[in-house]
Image 1 (cartoon, rainbow, N blue to C red):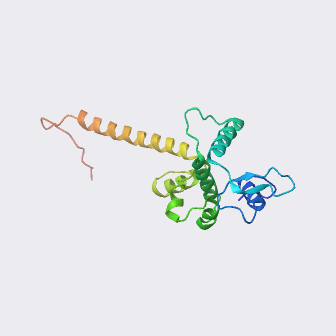
Image 2 (image 1 turned 180 degrees about the vertical axis):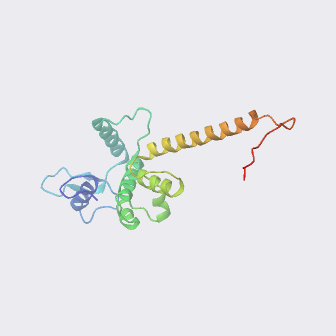
Image 3 (image 1 turned 120 degrees about the vertical axis):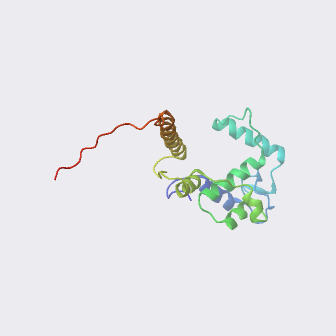
Amino acid sequence: MDEPGTYGACHDIRKYLSLRPNNAEENFFLRINKDIEENWYSTFHLGRDKLSGMLKEICNITGIDCTNRRIVNHSLRKRTAQKLNDEGLDSQAIMNVTLHRSIAGLNAYRTQNEKQKLDIAKLTLPGISKDISMQENLEKSAEDLNTEQRIENLSSQEETKTEPFTEIQNITIPLKLI
C-alpha cells in the first residue's frame, strides 16, 4: 500500500478503477473517452497496437532503455501483479485487477522480491544480516566461504609438509623432584 499522503502505483490503480464505467468490458485498459463531458474512459478496451505503442512511449518518457528488451502488454500485467504482491495484497485482490482466472496463472507472473530472498537467506545461511542488501550479504557469504577454504587449504598444506618420523629421537623429559 502507498504511504498516507503519497501517490504511488496503488493510488494510481485505485484512481483508474474508480473512473472506469460500471458497464465497461472486463479488459483492464480502456480507451480514453474523447467526449470530456462523459466518463474519462469508454466502455471498450484499448487495442493491442495502441497499448504496445503507449508502453514504448512510457518507456521513452521515463528513460527506460528498451533497446534490447521486448516490452509487450504482458510486461505491464506482470509488473502490476508483482508490485501488488510486493505491497502485500492477497491473491484474490490481485486477480481482480489482472483478471487471472486461477492462482496458478497468477503465480506465473510473480517472482521472489529482494525482501523474500533475504528472508530465505537468513533462514538457510549463517551470518546473513537483515540490515544490508541481498547483494552485500551474498558478497559477505562468498568472502566467508573463501576464508574458510583458505584455512582448510593451509591446514592441508601443513599436514602434507610435515615429514613422518623415520627414526625415534632421543628426548629427555625431566622428572619432577620429590
